[in-house]
Amino acid sequence: MVIYGVALLSICLLIGVLLGKLLGVSIGIDANVGGVGIAMVFLVLLVDYLKKNKKLNIKSQEGMAFWGAMYIPIVIAMAAKQNVVAALDGGPIALLAGVTTVIVSWAMVPVLSNIGRDKSILNEELGGTGDVRNVK
Image 1 (cartoon, helix red, strand yellow):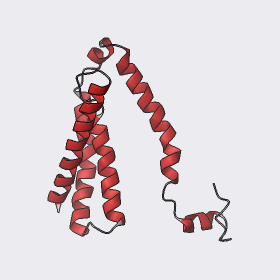
Image 2 (image 1 turned 60 degrees about the horizontal axis):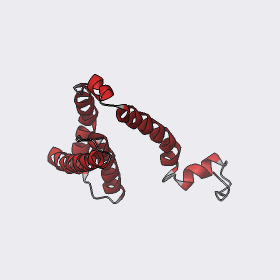
Image 3 (image 1 turned 180 degrees about the vertical axis):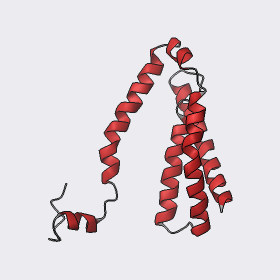
Image 4 (image 1 turned 120 degrees about the vertical axis):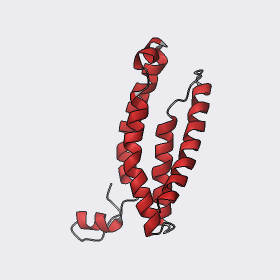
């Protein structure tokens, strides 16, 4: 049901906005720093957790698929209305935050891609030997 998607999205958004505001205050900026991105990470992790533990029925999964498809255009629309020129005039902290985010994101790709790899996939990569102890 779509309503479950809305509830989960709302919870994640509230947590993300709160953490983004706290992050902004902690670095001396009176603004939300990355709250929407934090919310998106929470949403992805929460949906993955619920699917793995079979807590989402088919209707709930359809609702989450709907909101998952809607979330990216919403994030793009929110980011498009921000004033980049004012952020750059505000000082080097905006540039530092952007560069740091990109570097951390690039570094996390290999880490996240290896989390939860299925041993049967590794077994196929080894040609069916069944010895997955030495696979990196």
